[in-house]
Length: 266
Ligand code: ADP
Image 1: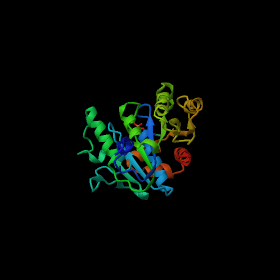
Image 2: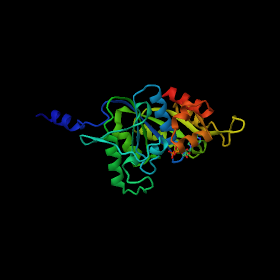
Image 3: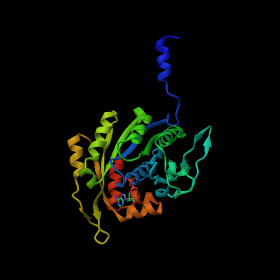
Image 4: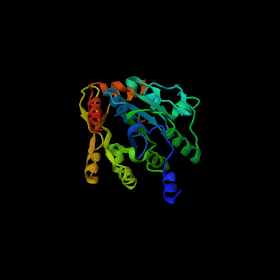
C-alpha cells in the first residue's frame, strides 16, 4: 500500500447518520435569549409543512428547548443498530434533542467540557436521519468550542443562519458570529433580526421599542443577505409555551407573515 493510499484511508471518515442529508442549516446566535430556538423550530416546522423532508436537531446543551416548543417533552428516541432514531412530529418532521436523553425535564444539565463535547458529537453523528432535504440544527449560542465543533462535524454541508436581536446587534456579538463563519469557510444564508418591534395586541400594529434595523445595516456592511425582521409577538411566546409552534408559522399575525418570508428565503 503506497503512502497516497494510506493518506486517503486516514482521510476517509466513518459513516455518519447524516450522510444522506442534503444540506444542514445551523442556526447560530451571538448570545442566548435572542430567539434562536424559536426561529429553529419555526423554520423546521415551516419547511416540513412545505413538503421538504426536514429534520430538527437540538444540540443546545445548556437549554434544550425544542422538546417543549414542539410539545414532545418526555419522548424517548428509539434505537436502530446503535443509532438513535428521530422522534416523529407532524409533517414527517424528525426531531432529536439532548432533552430526550435526560432523565427528567427539570434536570440541570451540568457537563464537564469533554463530556459536553462528546455528547454534541454523538448527537450530531449518531442519529439516523435517512434521506432528508434539510437538517436544521439549533446550536449552542456564541462562538466558542461548542458551535465550533458543530460546524466542523457537519463540514461541507453546513450553511449558517444567524439570529440576532436589535440589542444584540449593538454589542458586536453578531459581527463575531459572521467572522466565525468566515474563518470556518461556512457560507451564511443570512441574518434574521428577531424581537424586532412589538406587535400591539390591541391595535395589531408593529411598534419599534428598541431601534430596529441594525441587523439589516450590519448585513449590508458585511455583504451577507438580510432575511427579515420578526417582531415581538405575544402569540409567538404563547405558541412556544403551548407547544403548537406551527400556529406561529401558519397563522396570519405579523410575526407569522415575517416567519414565512424568512422561510421562503432559506
Ligand atoms: P434562545 O434559543 O436564543 O435562547 P428562545 O428561542 O428560547 O431563545 O427564546 C427566548 C424567549 O423569547 C422564549 O420565551 C420565546 O418564547 C421568546 N420569543 C422568542 N422570539 C419571540 C418573538 N418573536 N415574540 C415573542 N416572544 C419570542
